[in-house]
Each structure stands twice: as C-alpha cells, then as structure tokens.
Length: 336
Length: 260
Image (cartoon, rainbow over all chains, first blue to last red; front, side, top):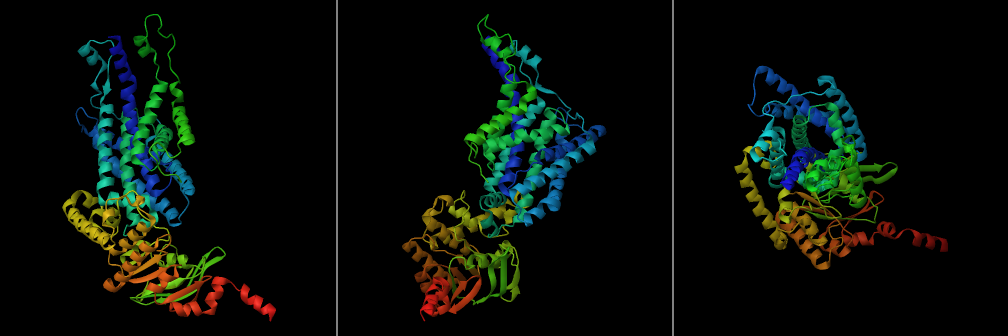
C-alpha cells in the first residue's frame, strides 16, 4: 500500500505537472526551432510573441465571458484561441514586413538578426504590458479538474490523491494534436517540403522554383499558431503574467538546444527533458521517501534539491552540460 | 540569347568582374575558361541573380534581366548548378527532383487543406517525370536513396537532372566535372550533348578539364582578371598569346626581354 501511495504521490506531484509543462515547452521550442531552421536566427522575441498571442486570447475570453458565451466544462479560452492565433499571425507578418525583411534583403548575419529580435522583444514586452498591464490575469473558467484528489481518494481508498487539472489534460491533448499536424505538414505536404528544402539548402532552394518570401511567410504563420497555443496553454495552466513569458525564454531555448536546434523532434524531446529535470530537482521528495523508507529512516528535511525559486538554474545547467559535451544537441541539430 | 554588357561586380576594392561583355548564342554550348580567380563563378552568380551587379546590364532574348531574383530567373528558364554540388540532403533523389518545378499547387496553405485531389494528381505526374529523368541519367537505382548519401559525381548528375524537370532554356554549369571520375564525366558529357541536341538547351559551362571543353564546347570564352580576354574555338584560344600569358604569367616574356 505504501508503495502504491508513493507512486501516486510521484505521479501527482512530478509526472503530471512535468508532462503538462513539457508539452508547453515543446510547443514553444518548436516555434524557436522552426525559425532557427528556416529563417536562420535565434528569435529572442518568441517568449513575448507567446505573451502577445495569449493576451489577445485573454481579451477575447473576457469578451465572450461578458457575453455569457461558454464552452461548458471546457475553458472559454479555447473559443478565443483561433482569434488569438489570427492576431498573433497579423503581428508576426507585420514585424516581418517592417523589421526582418529589411535585414533579410541585406543578407544580415544571424548575430545581427538575434540582436534585432532582442529589440523586437522589448517592443512587444512594452506593448503587451501597455495593453493588459503587468499584473497576473485570470481567465481560466469551466471545470477545474478532470479527476480531483478527493474523488480519486474516495474511489481508490488510498491516502494519496491524484489530481489531473482540466488544463493539464487539454494541454497534453492539444500538444499531441498540434505536433501530429505539424509533422504531417512538414513531411507530407508540398509546402512543408519546400520549408524543409529551404532549411536544408537555402542556395539551392532559391535557384529552384521555391519562392523564399512565401516560405518565410508560411513559417511565420505556423510559428504564430504554435506560439499562441503554447502561450495560452501555459496561461491556463498557471496564470497569465507578461513577465513570466519573458522568463520562459530560457527553458524554451534550453529545450530547443538540448534537442538540437533546427530539429523539430529534438525540440519536443528537449521540452520534456527540461520539464522533467526542473520538476524533479525542485520537488520536495520527503513525502515519497516517507512511504518508501523503512520505519525510523524517514527523512527529517524536505529532501528538496533546489528551491523552486532557482528552477531557472536547472535549464541553465542542462544547457551548459549539453553545449559542453554535445553541442549539436541530442538529435543532431544544425550548428552555425 | 544572353547578352552581358559591361558588367562590373566589386567586393569593396576588389573588382571580381571588371567590365565583362559577352554574348551567348542560342543553342550553343559555350565554354567559359580562365585561371582561378578570373571571375567566372562571380559572373555566373551575377547573371543567375545570386549577387546584384555593381553596374552593367544582362539581357535574355532582348529582355532586361539584370538583378532579378534567382527564383524569378528560374521561371524564365535560366538555371544554374554549383561548383560544389548542392542537394537537399535529407530528401531522396526522387524528392529532390520533385522539388524543382515552381508554383506547384500544393505550395499554398489553402490548397494544402482544400486542394488535396489536385495536388495528388500533380504529384503523380511529377513523380513519373522524376523517374524518367533518373532513367535518362542512368541512375534510376538511386531514386529512393537520400541525396546526402550518394557520391559526389552522382550529385552532379542529380544537379543536371534538376534542369530537366522544367522547361529550361539556358543552363549554367559551374565546374560540373570537378572531382568526378572519367567514366561518370563521360556520362555527364553525353547527357549535356543529348539535352542540347534533343531539347535545344543552351549551355554555358565553366570547366578546367580541356578535354571535356574540347569535346563539348564551341565557342570557348576565356576570362582573366574579371574581363573577357578572348573568344573562339578551343584551338584558337589555345594559340592566343594573351591567354597563355594569363595562365602562365609574364615571367617568361620578361626574362626574354632582359636577355634581349
């Protein structure tokens, strides 16, 4: 029984949150990795792109809520999500037109584009805070749990409960669907193949019939979709606060780099590696260990390796290890 | 077919192409030779739209094509290959060929979702064509191999195959024979001659292998220091004193002068 309780505690406090967080990171990292692979620069504005898409979604969620529209047990935000994606697409196409295209025509070096994207970051950062304010915003509604800890305890008679939040369930399902669609798109459709071709060999793609501007545009559109979905899922799961999206940049980039920049499968794997490391390192293992250790040997302390305040350090550390020992990442990304 | 007028391409103070003027006749296989650094590849790059010219004009069949983007030139039937073979390494040889034709139905997001049937029809036609091209080049066994894993010479053949996927009018081949063994080079030469005769492709060939040039090309243009030095048959070029000077330097002559 103790063993079962330990497993349930582990699932409840480590596995479920890490899977949800990992899916969010994976979606974010996919956006970063697509831009890196196709447009050939590290887009530091990605975190704030997520914030922008999520912000539009939040605003429309509020509007729908005020109209009394809801999806029943599902969060209303899902209804507003397509509008958020459209808004984010408009923003990214506008930034591309106004900012990035100029540098692309100059054939600017990736380093320059990185700094340019940093500038875009600050502008988006300010824009989002100007519109919605710097504070925490709640927009989740609908049923809070798929399985709540109490019903689980009543059902099984165990001492530990397993809670699965609706948002966690939605996160994982959405992530699976989106990733499946993306891979189908990249591998099976002509448009996706043009994108892969452009990423593989830009010179040759230019000298084939591939229209580079169209590839770039479609990339931005897809990235807008991924970023908004990731941003909204993260916001639903935790809460929407503009600054946290800026902070998310580190784990997202760590995920993309750990998996191998430019490689979509790597981005997903990297997202889960980072999420699981972050959660396991900052989790207080006392509860699980108490169940597992023989009587009298239970730990007195929390057995928490790192305070949650330092969770960003985990991404840093993993990033460092990967860059030192396997700079192209787990799945052989590109190196510039 | 192609007329280049007083073309300049400067990189800072370095004049890679320095006032080159030349004319390429329709249906010819023109050889472009010259010592390393003569500006041959840069000239190619400017004509093919990879680099913008500093000044000068390029016309194709009377139409000004100066400074057009590579994919626009591609649609006009102007194609080029690279000195070092380029390929989409993670795709199969067949897929590489199928990538070539531009403006395919499946290239817009809308059709990806709502034009599935039309895309499938087009893909089937392209696939048949790609297989036909691979057969023409006698490499049909490579169809399902990843293009990144085939040999350097086979990549060159694949590059030539790319030009056959569309209605090319003029093809620029940049050192198609570099690093290719004799047998394969002959296969490439045969393919070029057949394409020229059967499909009326015009070719411009940069090559250092004089046997290859001699077999295929007439006329031959010799470049040096960014300028066109001489034009004529290979025999005429070989006899041209300026050309010999460009290749071997003026040391010999100066020595003779001193002795005199």
